[in-house]
Length: 553
Length: 79
Image: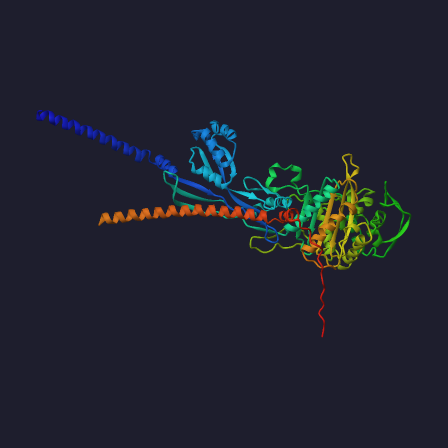
């Protein structure tokens, strides 16, 4: 080979190297200058990930610190079907680890028209983690919290429930949602090619929700629900409700409705069962409402407990004829007798003397016609006619608890005022939030001590000698009142077959510690409050007195 | 000397990386333990529910409801 040929080859080689080097330089320049930002963010997205850290929803405890609603960690499994390479294998893995039917999961994973589908919301952490370890392309995972109600049915109508997004949807879960829900945290992590976290580069801490302590006692609540269940079954009633309150503090110890439900299964429960009737629904109270007129008349000095009235069996009020429940001749009764014997004619006679305006004032003063302010969502204010809307016969029915609608909560608060020496205390369910101070009680005097004592004495006679004898508890003096009211029907009149029987009272009568109300909606076989509701009152009172170690009076 | 320095820096970075990985693993472990604790708490609360205990007491063990409480009032005698 000549030197000339050799030089030519060397030059060619240099040219080739130079060209390759120039191309490499151009490519490097292109990647580092022009594509730098796009490739940088692509790289970052491949090894960096921002993970949401869900806050812990606060626990709801009863007054003794027993958990009523708690959060449990769960993992939600989702999929991008477009990235699932083998839907069949993925479906079988899901069946093995999460226990879902592969036949149902497969079509979802195979449908490439969707970019996002849930495989299972709030799956158990063990199964989800096993699935995650399989590293199936197209499947994704993120942590969530699942709400659990360990007492199941007990207190469900008070607690309400939180949905799959851990948002309160009903009851106290809804009322206290802001308090129970914290704020979501975030952390940005760097991962290696195998998906293992190498480093946390940024972290924004979340804030857990606050724990809430209620005034509810789970043992009393459970017993009240059991008694209501038995009462409802015994009288084949449509529904029943009960409220147990401490009259001195307004703390609700039990708030139960039947039929109830298990809060863990709320999506499958009929909508009608989900509301708490004791707060959201109204009923015509019947004779239990007579204390308003009697208390008003006593307080204003219009009557005394021994004032005497000559009362016929029936009286005409405008176009209505008012009569007593039991047929009798004209009798002389004291105010005391009128309440203990629940005389409609007697109460209407006193109401006519008191007058429309003063009666409506007393109705308001006892808290009817406006929400009590109990810390529960959807409280009804009841239905109370304004004085200008009264007809000629209204004074013949409102004072005896007809033509007026109240909630069980309003009625308990009203009797609580009589039990609490004339001081009305706002009922409440939340004792304290987190480690904070106790909820401040709202209270106002509506009756003098003297009048409340007089009314307490009259109510004691109802149980000792009158219509409420079934409410007696051996060893204790009980004060209370029965109520029986026909339900309004669709035609604007009153039903002749559908009634609400109720009993409301307090115990021990001398120094009341408990106010208890029981209502039985549409009982069959008997309708009277003294027959259908008073025995339930006695059973609830007997348990609560023993449980709370309240000595006999 | 430069080589030793570079080797030291690399070794330090590797050590930090390993520690970071351990921290993450421990975080994961802590989350799993918290999750287990919550599950156990839930099981405990369910098992300790008054209604369930009453059911077991009356149904399985054949126990009856307690009799009414007897209260004795003791008066202090003055001497």
